[in-house]
Length: 134
Image (cartoon, rainbow, N blue to C red):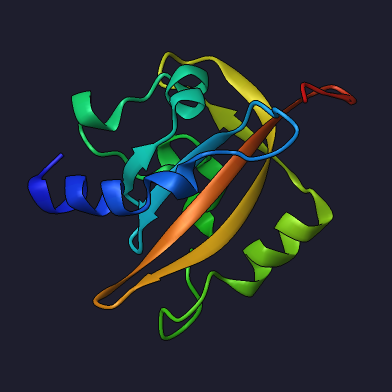
């Protein structure tokens, strides 16, 4: 991770923590082009992805369905309304960890704005069959 993205990650480090019910959720910080900039500890464990030790990957390498969808709406002002809708209804996505394991997860998308760029915060909550892990 270069110095600029390291500083950026430090600025948003608090956003990468789940507060509340102790839910085990992966939280990813994405650049507006979908490249993963950082993840929380649970994200590194669940997805087997450590941005500081890995080549930066696009989110669609872990969630292939996102390859078909623009992450941001026209003008890059907000997360795509379709993705926000899927977040609200708890749509399940197939998620592939770096080691090839797969699971089903609910994804939630949030906008983070910095003066010179738009960032996307993605929360991945694992779901197995009908039972939530958290």
